Length: 320
Image 1 (tube, one colour):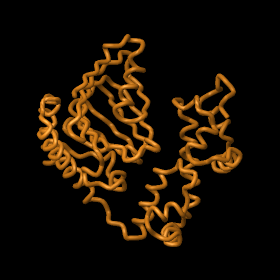
Image 2: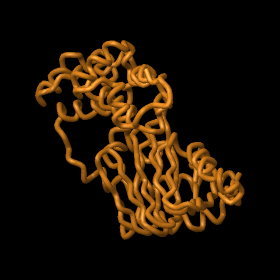
Image 3: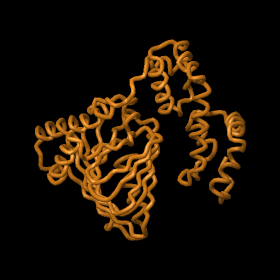
Image 4: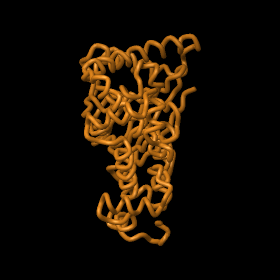
């Protein structure tokens, strides 16, 4: 089934909100910020076996997505730039995509996409397993530009054009074969990045994997050395030694990452209606008083005051 969505179907005053809702349904919870007063866009989306292919033409704008907490095995997204310039920011990396370039977006981490001008892109959303990538490898290569001159990337882009035009015209058997071929091409493009990654020793690899696990489970109130060690099939002592070699403790890392995530949420205008307690609980900190003490100790200011400084005075007093 093919769906076409055109922003012009909505009244001008409502387009921004409707367009944001559409993008959230397609990808992940996100904030849409148009860079021009006229919100214009057209999306064509279709399913091909286990892949979702989306072709988007959109006016200049910024998208900021939040991690999909609690969603198991969320699909990854490969974005292909067709016209205009696209800038992706994720996991401390920044990728500037020109027409023909592509990059991977990790659904488990916040991502910002800047479309500085009218832009056309095609995205393919699919399970990471179809690309032959573990969650750790997805994290390691996300927001990294793959040049359109790469043979596998060029072949992928060449395949996507006719595929978008032919969405909904394939038989079931054709869909399966085309989906397999496309997943293999995308996997080949991304594997070139994986092969360039440094090969950490066992201890360093364990620490990196544990850190990635922590980032994806900050909302679990039981997150700690025991649960992380169990998830990696190692003893708690082995895990502790991996962090001691880096001059860290896992408990301190978890506390630091939770506080940092909560601080970012308190400064996010899109989350201004959430109470401080609700935000703390979302990041696994169920003791409100304890959260306030740790926040003040880490950042030198109470959570309520930090939110006021970041967002300005609240129109109501329900921010606690």
